[in-house]
Image (cartoon, rainbow, N blue to C red; front, side, top):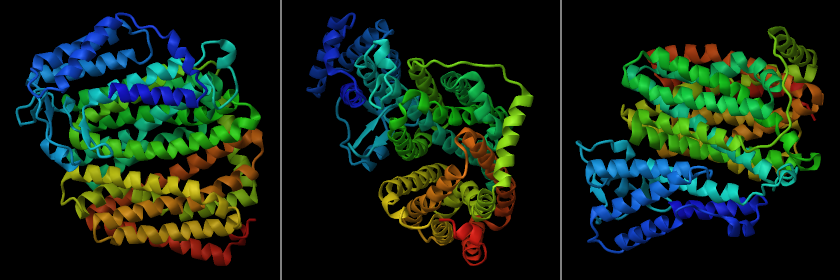
Length: 569
């Protein structure tokens, strides 16, 4: 994992304008010890009769060199990851591996002395080889992934030029944008892990569709309530500074969740912690978009925005899958991995160089900015008609978002929460995958159709797909429909975004978008609560079908009777 991480880091650094010749200037303290450790590890891997002590000596050596070079970005992650592996190996006389997981990915069963079969008495099983990676038919530990990430960061950051002028170069292929881009990718990776892990914990403790839906609400409330003010806060504090502190606070908050669960703290307290982390997310989101013009020249904004948008979708796929796998294998400890993503993002944001000022925040100022955005939205006939139509058309979104976990557990997982968590992660990943495919393939075709007509097509097809999901006879069929749902979401999302951008002055876009997002999320909250309550009585499937039918009917009626929506050019 270390070698693959280093290779990936070199490739990514060069892609972002790093200079490969800087490898010649790289220096590592105590490198002979690392060479000895790697040699022992290589010799041991070539012999099935090598004793466990040889592996331990090699691992301790690698951890020691990494720790002694802690000032190198990424070295501390290698030290921590290797130490985690050493700990679990020492406690269990071998690296525990889950036979079912190894078999599921088609990997051969380990026969060396380094590995030991995981049994009920295994200590710290969540640190063992439990994370399957089907692409390479292997199973890895959480420590392995920290080692790989550390190996990635060392060359990625070293190959970037340390010269101030180079850092401030306003290009996509520049150190400054590279650090920002990687930071926000890693931070965003943690968001779906939080959602999947929280719904798992909630359903495990309550077995209630209502409380599970409430867990989804917890992730929605900050954007709904604080969304009006998040952008204003980021403007006042400074965009990079806001992102940095939001990630630091989120890392600390999320890391406390497994501790609270271990102490049998009330679930309400966990909800409060996630809610506070969500408030930070409501500030981080607009800040990461607002900082891009400061990092790139005007003629490079489109390329930078496209890269950020594409990585958003890819991260949704990876984060959702990782969330499902982590919950199924590591349980509550998935939150520790989640916290680590925010901490690593903060470390990268420290390296972003940007001149930013801050000014004093007042509640009156925040309220005034929020009011201006809402007033403009309300006074624009086109934007307001679009807003009302979208609110009615998206009534199915909070229903399917809130009820999908309970729907999957009850319909396809036979009540098994862990299987349901994996299926939920796969469903979220399927939606993101469909959206990625649509984002790449559809724009050329969408530009040929009127935006109003696209809105109608997008909402009508979304409603129809949601109805079919509620009627799906098997999980593979449902998974394919979830992927199709990602496609249909893009069909209505692109024209909606374009209409808002074209109808709003540049100096008001953040406030108008903030008002629109807040209105949408506020309208979702009662729908989620009501649908969760009804689902405990009648089951999730009928409500999902009904919600999809409402969306489909809204699109049909708008096409026939609301030209302000359907006739937008």
